[in-house]
Length: 109
Picture (cartoon, rainbow, N blue to C red):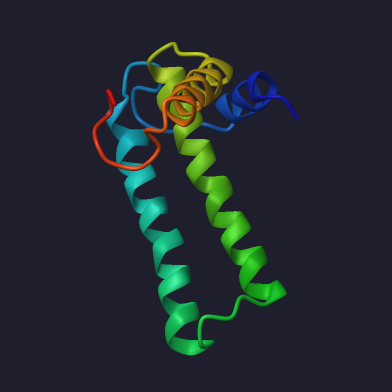
C-alpha cells in the first residue's frame, strides 16, 4: 500500500469533533498510542524477560498501526501529504548519514 492510498482510506474512518479543523484531537491520540506502544515493550521486559513472541509482535503491530493512523490524520488536518512526510524524512536522514551526523541531537544537524 502506498502512503497516499493509506491516507485516503484512513481519512474515511476518522470520527471526531470538528474533523478537518481540529489537529489537536489526533495529536493527543498520537501521544496516547505512542504510550501504548511503549507500554507493550515495558510489559515484555517485565513479563517475558525481554523476549518478543509472535503474539506480542502482533499486538505491537496493531499499536504501530494506530500510531500510523494518527500521524496520517495529523497530516490530513494540516493538508500535508503523508507521502511527502515520508520522503522528507528519508531525505533528511540520508543527508545526515552522508554527512556522518546520524548521532547527536537537534533537528538541523
